[in-house]
Amino acid sequence: MTVVGPFGLSVRDQALEADVQAGLAAVEEGLLEATKSEVPFITGAAQHLVRAGGKRFRPLLVMLAAQFGDPYAPGVVPSAVVVELTHLATLYHDDVMDEAAVRRGVDSANTRWGNSVAVLTGDFLFARASQILADLGPEAVRVQALAFERLVTGQILETAGPTDGRDPVEHYLDVLGGKTGSLVAVACRFGAMMSGADERVVDVLTQYGERLGVAFQLADDYLDIASDSHESGKTPGTDLREGIPTLPVLRLRERAARLGLPEDLALCELLDSDLADDARHAEALAALRAHPALEQARRDTLRYAEEARAALAPLRECDAKVALTELCDAVVHRAG
View 1 (cartoon, rainbow, N blue to C red):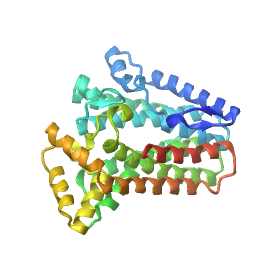
View 2: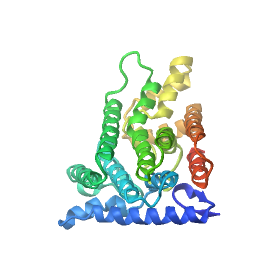
View 3: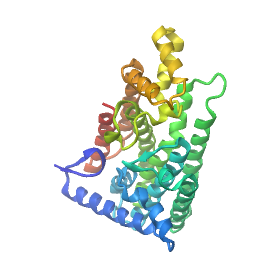
């Protein structure tokens, strides 16, 4: 048994391991090449998060999905670079919106260079991704454009909040489908599509990616409350401090509205206060860690991971399918 990719994913087949490792190494080279500029300052800013590391979750999915066709097809690695560049670009923008101080264990770009440079660096990465994408053909451009539209729509809907009468939890899960699920689905789609896999296989892997992406983000929501910065690479409770209603908070508010328990209402009142105050923020974080809403959010994560696993059922049995199934387990493990 060997280990490759995020969360210590085990790959038991030596040929598959070699393919995945070679593919991820090529993606890493592609990321560094794509983030070079004639202007050294831009190169430094653009490579800031590339060199900080990261799970390379989406490129890994491209490599595994490509196993259902020709994993050596010329479009596989470039498509993985496109997906990761797009993801990295959204991180630069997210950190500005969230006023995050830490990303992947290092200072966020907005902390180091300011909001304007961070936003423009994200735009630079989008531009480089588009250049690579143009060489992959019109269908790839269309797939990426639709996913990017969903991603931005999800971000806008998160900012706007649910409309009157809309269940906040349902709204939030729809937001995650756009913000996170769409790009993870594209990673799986590109891998299968660029490898020449059957269209039915492409569709199955796309559905799997959508569900896995939501589970992955729900696990991040859980970790934002439950973990320390060493585990997550981010400052704990960042979303909490900024008043972003992630699933644990939404489950708390849902329970408070349903049961009216004084302790739930008091915690909601605390969350509505100014959590820029460190003491108040620490109190809220500790209370949420001990609250049943956090466990409910964990169960929601398990449900989406199980739906992702079930989506793989039509695929032929092979080591790549086993690895994709184990990624569902790995997401679950992240959420305790």
